[in-house]
Length: 235
View 1 (cartoon, rainbow, N blue to C red):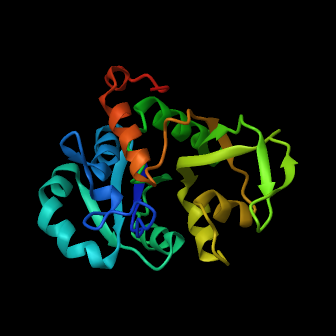
View 2: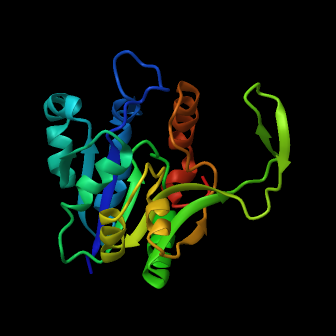
């Protein structure tokens, strides 16, 4: 049954990536733009019925010129984003088909997601109504003051670093976004503020988001690793 929509968030400004020519999601890695890795994974998934890519309005002409063939081949719809990430996701949620059961919201700048992890978080959302990928924080955590001096050591017990995909029942995330206030930093926070419980599926730190050029070099190595073709979720 095809009952999952995938929203790929790619409308950010890539300010920390510091490339004068390309935003990180449009950089080519091993012959494919970064966004296409996740789009291909979604297109190949037996439960995915709809794929939506959010882009910044200023990128529309470039995307149409460079990627129309790729988008058509993978069945990807384009939605223009807003000022902040949550505005862009809200725009995409409004385009999700009413027959969809679950919505998976994923950073297009996380191209190392495996099929196994995608399956696990979808299955968890089936069971709980909402689920996210996250990795436990293992290092010692320090809180700093304005002078970059250690103010305190924070217990890492129970602390997780959120990743994507974050998967929700369509009706839950629609209601949550309809009532969202402030500037939430991820979609799970929007659901939490609406009173929904969100399950965690443990994920490796290698499901990383490209933020800097150093991240890009790490991703290039990960995407070339032989484990990717085996379906191993811990590549």
